[in-house]
Image 1 (cartoon, rainbow, N blue to C red):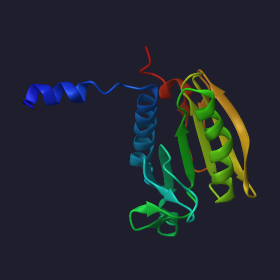
Image 2 (cartoon, rainbow, N blue to C red):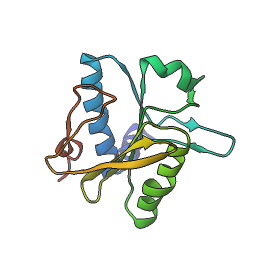
Image 3 (cartoon, one colour):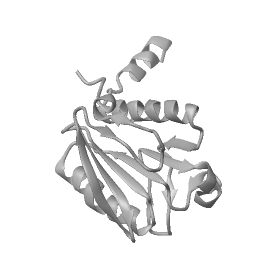
Image 4 (spheres, one colour):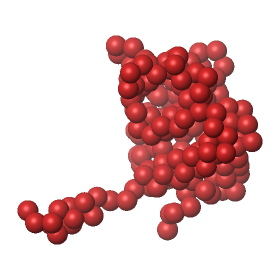
Length: 165
């Protein structure tokens, strides 16, 4: 295979709403954390909660003060502060993120969970209450998302979806 064939293979990978949304979120968090270095946001790293419960969230935030309690080796093994999942198209994917993963994250003490719905351009935010995550709000269009985990952080929903045609 010559170089031009290799390049065409790389370029053939589709740009998805998931990757664009995840990228926009990561940039927004990076800007905030550069000015207020209170923790770390990590994309696509495995979280292993038990021998039977493991996931790979699209983005996860862990505060500096909790890092050693949450990270073992190269993986998350404790309750993350914030988990963000960007839904794939389809009812089954949406059900998995809104129900199955939310229950799992609640069970293992995740403080806050965001479900970014690429199809409908909205974000559902859930916050910990006991061993459950309860809906704190649904954000659309020009709404701004704030979280007590990141003092002064505000994110317009339009920022998450800004590269969409």
